[in-house]
Image (cartoon, rainbow, N blue to C red):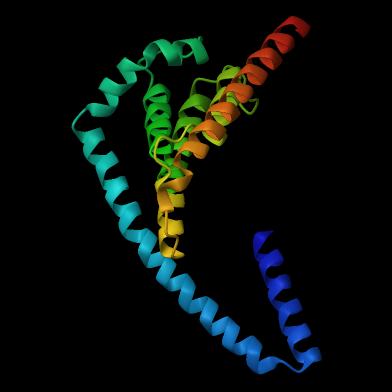
Length: 195
């Protein structure tokens, strides 16, 4: 679907460039945009490789399992029916850790892995469980201690204070997670009563 949207936007831009007689400006803008995209991608690549590598080192060193044990009371509160030693719990902790570090790109495959593990223990395959819904809420509205991707984007765009967004991100992400978790718990309780 996104391919159609982007293709349509490009065709509309070319069409209006032709109609207005500004094809030269359109071509220059397209080349400048492509150049900026490549520069930004390379500036983000180093940061993503560093943090993804750090997460892999933590995983191989057993730090993620230790972190999982450390936050077990929280995960038990959020996911009461999830066995604490299940592969789903480990994948969920890895995803939360990546999101906590602001690495949404690194968190995506971990989130998909967690959902696949949750589906394996799903008593009604194909139907989302309360744990799945809660995980989606936490993954979507995650608390980000250090929003590294946004900071890197701000730095690449020439911001004089790329770290100035850290405290507002903490406030917004904490509020979003709180509201999301409360809503998910209320809806899960309502659904259980309805059954």
